[in-house]
Image (tube, rainbow, N blue to C red; front, side, top):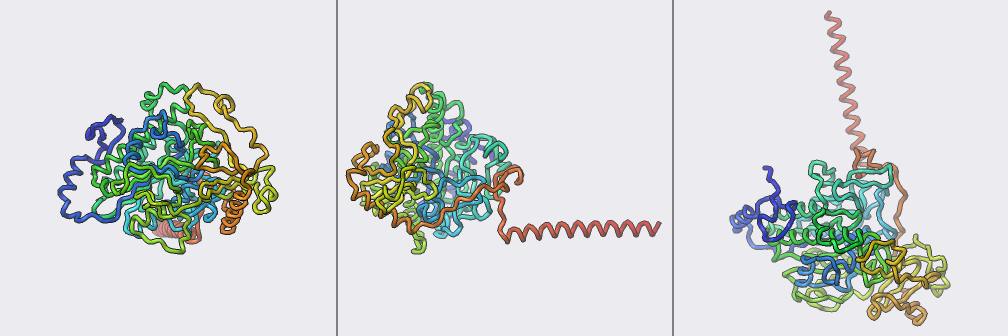
Length: 566
């Protein structure tokens, strides 16, 4: 039966676009829930888990952090839940996603360097057990909607091979919000929207991805029985990553922002906020909300070049300054003990793996070698965090600090290597941490970033390869204490060296030309075949050839018989 998408505005007293819709009538679903109430029986003790990961949202870019961007839904959900005000992620997309999925630092998965590129034969290592796999083993129905960005060069890397029952979204790191196409240079362009393990041509109606992903998420909620089986929904929005695209009506409310990048970015955040409003309404309507844990997180800091703001934090996306790794995050749930609070304990994105698996009554095997901690009691009850340090990363490939040396690292560490470590109040950086300015909110006239925008450009960092900050006392990283406290620097360098002994080799292969979508029907997708897949393909072609040859022989024999009769 084909059911038209019905605008949510017909059922809820809120001002929303006609493009926002759900897959069946709210009234019909309510009636069905009422009729099936006895059949559903007692609800499971396992909570439904909704993990919302947004892309490139800056630390300042939410209303409750003082932004000019209006985010009433996020503000309300955070105010009624627990705001994570000492929460850290990684500075780039793939690293954060890999650590969310595995609960392990990059040095333990081989993904220490940069991100997974579209043309690289690389993905989240298959030997790593993932969060959805553990939840699936615990009885969850597992679904992913949105951006994957953990590699796809072979079929085994795809989300549905890594623990998700269903997948609808994109495999790459970015793309057009409407056409869902992505180019890697002028000669490598392809389509990037998937349903399961196939291109989603038939499901694609050219919708803005924030709208489309929300519709899909609501559809999953509508078609699942919340009392029969716990649900894990990983909703990884493309927004607010570049390119800066947004439906025109969202721009109207930000006419007062002269900078066009900031204006479009603000509109994208508002559209995202509205999407989460509709998702929350669906959770309540379909009977999930009272037994649901919602986690909201950005994957890294904002990019000022694309309208984001991390003010007053230092640095931006792709850097190990606070602006690149300190994220917007909160937990909203009726199951929280201490609602309406702020959690200032140290929490890292690797902590979600053990926290959510334990919450979902799954098992944590010792051989998982997790770097994350179960922090549910820290968040829900305000207990001290079991986490006291974070290895932000060690990237042995990125050694661009010209003055970095073993001597500068007291013979304990080569400070040319890009690395960052947090222990208690202290944060140590070595190598080149990345772009290090403090970037004010871009609410003034559009200007190049090399002019007035960065009115606090740092000059004195040139030639340095090591920094030490007391983040508790100096959250904006304005006072380098590396010269004042060399004994703390040495202790932290020794800790870095200890971590480095546990690191696996970096996996960052070169570009594979076979990845070009022109060899795959115009679609970005798996191009590498393992031995079993190759054998199956060879067998298929052999069968086709044999059938074709047999047909030709039969036709020739029939023709000869006919000639003899004549």
